[in-house]
Image (cartoon, rainbow, N blue to C red; front, side):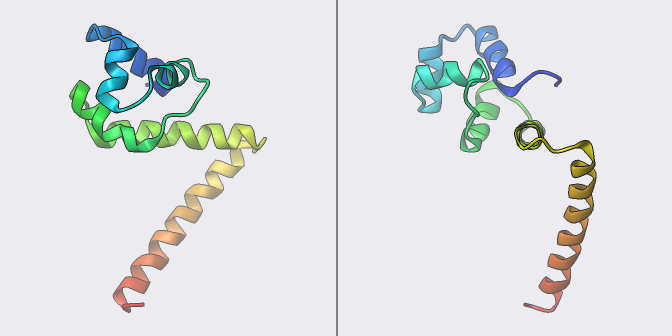
Length: 108
């Protein structure tokens, strides 16, 4: 998905013929807040992802991946980070996973 999560959510909602109010009710979210998410004026809270996946019969893991990739992109942009930051973050993820696995084996 090349578009923002909010734009994608709006397409899905309209595709099902749901109003902002109806979709908001399904999510337990105010329609005004949902409108802000759809217009990229507010970030979606991740606890809505599972419900969205269920409503639209989406793969939850794919949706979660898209969501967090977008959130990371916004974080990097908002903090004026260069592209090297993302490469370094990938290395840190590998390190942290390795360290966590080692600690788990040692029951630390």
